Length: 377
Ligand SMILES: *Cc1c(COP(=O)(O)O)cnc(C)c1O
Image (cartoon, rainbow, N blue to C red):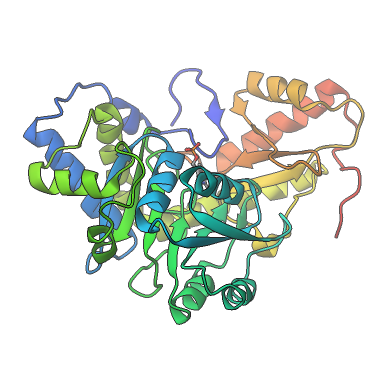
């Protein structure tokens, strides 16, 4: 799966892509070319299928990283006089709150500890207390820690209370089942370079068609205007503005491999095996996970840093990198951690090898125990 001596990315986007996905980028495409535009249309169709949304939803692709698509979804699907609730249990929830502030959309948050799930009950409580809330913006898998939030229950509460629901499914789309025919969701937002295992560079919003059609004039920004992107694409088959052609071609190849692997359930199962293998091997070295197993997603694992004074993340990172694996720094302020992504064109074997590289690194750094300072139960 690796080419030459490229290190394996254990970062949840960009991530390690297959040779076939990389090869798909070795060709230039014209943005007016019918074959290129047919490719975009086929990608959009397949993405809507992933969440079983063909009867109700449409896909609008957008140039940029995942955050661009999250921002566009909030800007387009929340009317200017709307108010958005965010149950905040991590960095990407905080990012949505920052986006809402920039957009000038009213918002409020329920603050949740980073190792605790957002719950339907806490969201329902907040909705009852503030009837001005019109929408909930929910991160499905909070990649900041790796915690999985209970999306179906939260969607149920939103529907019962007549509130819109916009889901940042960036790190879960394609790995954890989302079925918009069963689970009422206004918009699912994700990007090319996560669990579909494409190259980074385009996001997409799978929105309820009726809502998107009614969203004209909501966007503060031309480049982020999903209604405009959608209507232009319907009319011309083309992207507004230069498309990320190579990224689109790689995404097409990645989606073909995703389907061949068996779709969301097969991919999710491979990632789950990756996570389980990693946690077993790291536990054998003495590492402790930040999250209890019951809320751990099959996407990324946060480990406590060793308390040993010989540990520093920078040196640790460099030495693990020299052995061929790229780790991810922690995103928590309270405790010293690091993260290991388990997604991408990698399997349990790579997870075992990564843990072996980490074990050798501990020895080289003279770290006798990987045990953390003190783990709150
Ligand atoms: C990756 C990710 C994003 C988008 O981040 P970008 O750096 O803009 O690609 C948003 N939300 C979650 C949960 C993510 O994992």
